[in-house]
Amino acid sequence: MKELNQLEKQLEQRSVKELEEIIDTFLNSVAKLKDKYGGSNYYHYISAENVQGATCIQPHAIKSHLLYMLKDNHLDSMVRHKSKELLAKLDLMS
Image (cartoon, rainbow, N blue to C red):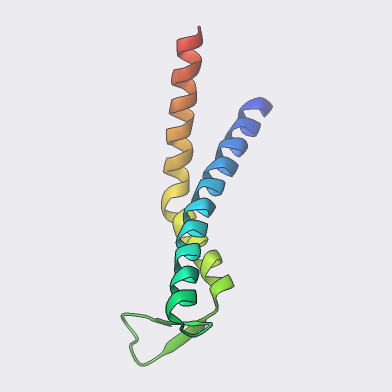
C-alpha cells in the first residue's frame, strides 16, 4: 500500500509540473508582450460581481493564482488519467 501512495504522489507531482509548465509558457508570452509594447508591472483583477473594486496583482502572484485555480479544477482528473495510462502500459508489459 505504501508503494501505491508513493506512486500516486509521483503522478500528482508530475501533474503539478505539467500545470506549471503551461503557466510558465503563458507568463513568458505575457512578458514578451510587455517587453515589446510596454505596460505596467502589475495587473488589475476586477471581479465580474464587483466592478467597483479592483485588486492589483503583480506578475509573480499571477502564477500562484493560476496554479491554485488549475490544480483545483484539473489535478484530480489528471492524476486519474495518468494512473489509467500507467496501468494500461503495465498491462501491455504482462
